[in-house]
Image 1 (cartoon, helix red, strand yellow):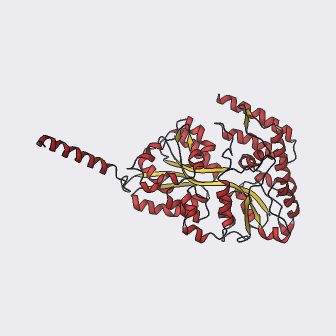
Image 2 (tube, one colour):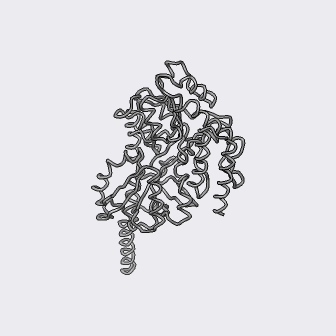
Image 3 (tube, rainbow, N blue to C red):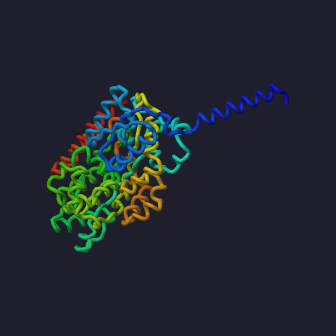
Length: 428
């Protein structure tokens, strides 16, 4: 072999070796950077916050975290993204709520390239470990716009002690749900049922009832709110609250409902499975060990529970994108997903549910069984499939409040239909 050829091959080998080293993942590659993260006051946030100092120590990246109640959190994220100031790096995002609007506005950083870059994402990250529903929910207009951190599905929470004491069977259908609420209403100081009734916040949990009756958000690109199926669903939903629910139902979102249930003042409620962490908290709940979990009941059109995915997203205007990505993929990695599940936050990864550490501490496998079973068929359309999600939720929320207060369901929904069509027409 000639000397020149030998030198050429040696040079090529050196270059390849240098490229391989350049692609090696390092926790400290962004050492010295500071990132700012906005998080919703959510059970997943409570689960991950204690471990952030661990990330800071491993990476040398300072993480400035700000948390806010959900409505305030969503508004703050919207304002900051719209300003384009660049001071916001990462934030929690529910793709089915803001994903389309934020993506069309150019506010979200596509994440596919980061995920495929071995310098930024270690092989231990294992994206195939996520449930398919979580990744598909986070894919907007062909781009991955968030990394899943928790997944929720609508389940029935019920007081096992009250059901046993008054010989009530666990409801499997809407008719049985109403019958159980009637029997248990007023028993042992508890209302029969609690559901969200606070305007826009109630729409996501009204959705599985609407779909259970055969209703839909839209039909042929226009609002379907005045359809007979939606009218039946709202009549049923509002009737449950008016007849067997708390007196202040129209002021209640999940915080108020879970608090009442934890105080022993509610016999059952349907809402996101993640709230096990609240009603089973020994520090604040009086019903620990008395809570049962069952699939969302079936309506005339079948069983249609929600599935909701929370993700971490990156601002397009972030000045620290690589450092931000390191935090995002750390927060959603298999180890931290298991940590969250150990704190009763439903994991978006299969491996967490199968981990021996989780199975060893799972004292109520009923909750795990319901979560995993419903993920196979749950409906991801818990929000209207439009850009102006917030406006449509406000419109429908007004109709829900009016119905609970005894207003005309057909009239309220016809108004909601007209207002929604006006909102959607502006998007075209």
